[in-house]
Image (spheres, rainbow, N blue to C red):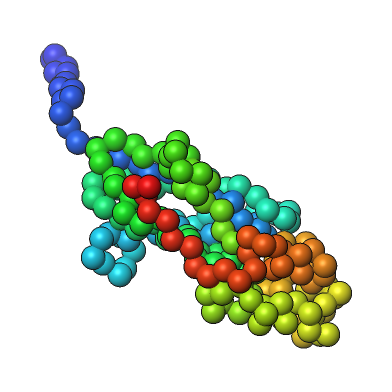
Length: 184
């Protein structure tokens, strides 16, 4: 008997869905980051990935990627507890991989989340400052009963002057959700 070998012809015109990848910089690596691609005209995410938690504290850069994204125009929305949401509008995915870290706009090449929205109302303001400064929180470890762990913005296990400083940073305080346009 003879063994018949089958061959698969290489089709240079075959379309494979491209990948989309980028980097997010945020505080407190103990909390997960959610990255969504929402197709234009839709409200639900077409693609979602969670950047897993890691140990440590402070501000860290973490990579994300979507392996197979259908060509189209999307809004990329990044959310994380204690941070303002960050939207990159009108991200155009074509038929080649899209690496956002190569984008000419620094606000897209490194998506830097603004930190300090402890109560989750979409603003970093005096309300959040008040949560850090509350007597039951300030100067205490997050393991103590009654301490609002969300006020530990950098993730070091303490609500203290470091967290106060994060809220009060000029680029954070008084800000609301961030939105940038991919085409700019």
